[in-house]
Length: 84
Image (tube, rainbow, N blue to C red; front, top):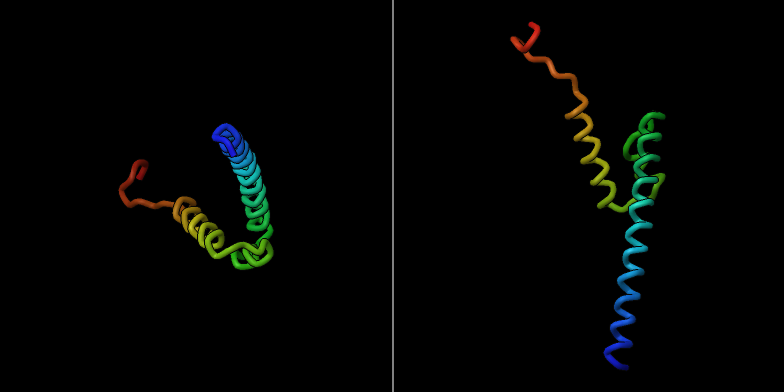
């Protein structure tokens, strides 16, 4: 096999990798949209993870996302802050 043939295969592999990365990004967007809808419907994080059949890594990612949501979304009350 010549270097040109191998180069062609490598370029094809790169194109396939880019296509798969775009497909994965679209899938992630869809999963996050489903996640938001499930949370709005009152499902627990464990129910969502189980229903989607997600791996432990994805489950932990969603748990971290939920923790950030709770930290950011929690109402803040400061004694002596502006307007008090």
